[in-house]
Every structure is written in C-alpha cells, then in structure tokens.
Image 1 (cartoon, one colour):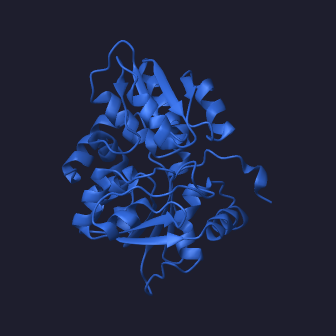
Image 2 (cartoon, one colour):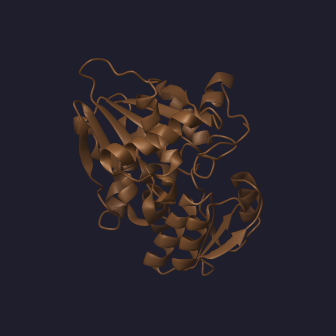
Image 3 (cartoon, rainbow, N blue to C red):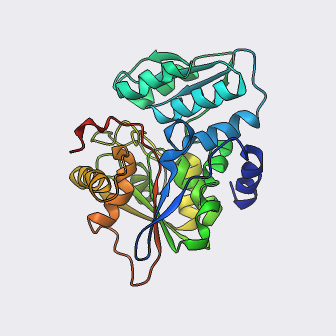
Length: 295
C-alpha cells in the first residue's frame, strides 16, 4: 500500500522539476492550494514526472490514455525529459486540451467516446512505457507530494475525485494527521459507489466535469487507501459545480475547470459543513479549461 515513505521518496525524485504551488488564504480558516498553476496545468504532472523518472523508458517513449490532463502531463514531462509521447484521448476531449497536447509535441490519437475506450486502445499499443493516468503506485506517490505542502495549516482537505490518483496520494501523505474528504459529481460517483459496494464498480459517466472526472471505475489503489483510511466521501450536483466555478472567478479571479470546482462546490453548496475553527484547504487541482463561459 502506497505510504508516506513512498511520497517522500517521490518528492526527492521530482524536486526541481515541478513547481511548489502557492497555498493562499481564502478567508477565516479557509485556504486554497493553487495546484492548477502546476506545469501543464494540473497536479498530474507530479505523478507523471515521478513515473517516468523512476522507470526504464524504451526508445518508443511513453504512451498514456487521458480525458485531457494526464495526457498533458505526460506530454509535458516527456518533452522535458527528451522522450517521445503518444496520448490516446476520447473524441469528446475538450479542444483546448487536444490543441495543447499537439503544442507540447505529443502524438495524439482520438478514439472512443469516453476515457475507458481511449484507455482500452492505449493498452493495445506495444513497445512503449504505459503510464496509467491514476492507478499506478508511482503516479499516486508523485501526486501525494501535494499533501506535504499543505499539512501545516490544514485540518481538512477537500479533494475532487475521478479515477482516484489524487485522493490516493493525498491519503498516503496525510492520513492520521489531516481529514481527507473526497468530493465527486453525482453524475460520476466512482469512489462513492465503490465504498458503498465495498469494491470498485463501473458507474455511468456524464455531466459537466466528465472531461476530467470521467473515469468509469475508481482505481484499485484509491479504493484500497480510501477504505483503509475510512475517509469521508460526498457528492455534489452539476449545478453546484457550475456555480462554484463561477464563484471562484467572481470572488477570487481564479479560473479552473469544472472537475476542479467540484471540490469547492462541497463548501459552497453546504454538502460539507466545517466545524467552527476547522481549517479547510480546498485543493484546486487543474485549469485546462476554456474560460469563455465565465461572465
């Protein structure tokens, strides 16, 4: 099971190659971790860099499947490390993310209507190092380095969940010291459904955050860690996600994608109600989005 020692080893491995992103006050006992300022626009760059640096990469380079952010992280890390990258994305992937993949030098293969189908196609690619978007110990440990940067000011951290690679890393870094609350859209409740079923199960994927929180099934690593740590899982409606994203822009001039706003929606919608004096950090994990719909 991925643990704090793994996260600390990842931190040493990727030091100097990723950004230590800002942790800013957002009001009394409220903080934002601005991980959307990470290289390639999301937390996934931490895990991807740790995965590649800790692996033997063949001449063909790396291959990844992604709704967008993992692919961008793979493309950016591969470019920085001088290895080829091929990224499989569903045809529904946002154009802003697909265009950026090309600019980063990755070969882009568009296939399937959702992440699961792009993933299946990517797994058929041979000769390259496959980099799983979330269910991989190296990815989880790299993602968990975020937790090392927020522990001193935090009682509780709100984490958006898709496949679970981020929440798994945060649990590994912070369990028994900080309360970890998983936040998912009602329309894509992978971890919530798994915890209820006591095993990972397939869920239907839809809604405004499906491009980044659109995994059909939570990863085994995330399920194992969430179950063992007995973390809390809450669900937010799509309308609450849209409103939270708009509120981040209106109140703080922060632009994030809908999947990221899901974490903040737990607070703004009242699904998670902190106790008096409880110090809460909302992890703002990605901003690969088109801001045109923000008024």
